[in-house]
Length: 128
Image 1 (spheres, helix red, strand yellow):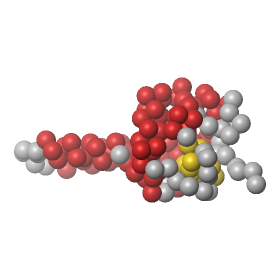
Image 2 (tube, rainbow, N blue to C red):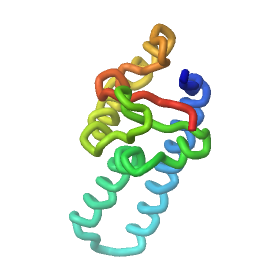
Image 3 (cartoon, rainbow, N blue to C red):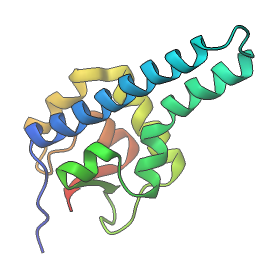
Image 4 (spheres, rainbow, N blue to C red):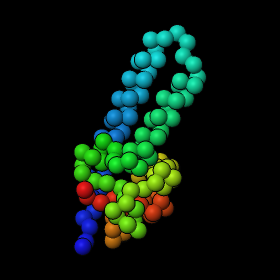
């Protein structure tokens, strides 16, 4: 059975939805923190880490909001019925951030439409 892989446009839309969500959360956190005179550094660090871990955690437990809206999922390349573990998801996200849009170039030469961060982490994106 051949899998359907999401288009570059679907993946870009998914990323855009997640980016808008993260920016909205940043603005919300900033507004809330501005209401208080002294906010402990650990609180700021916890909020920052929660934003950084949004994609890896959501990927591990199902899908980000953008992935869900676009009906695409990140799965293991070796078995597309299995989700990534948290370590794979963190590695995938790290290289996604580091490589940026350059990572997407490989979609056009990969038979399974895999990005460089997918190849490095052993993941693949499939239509749900």
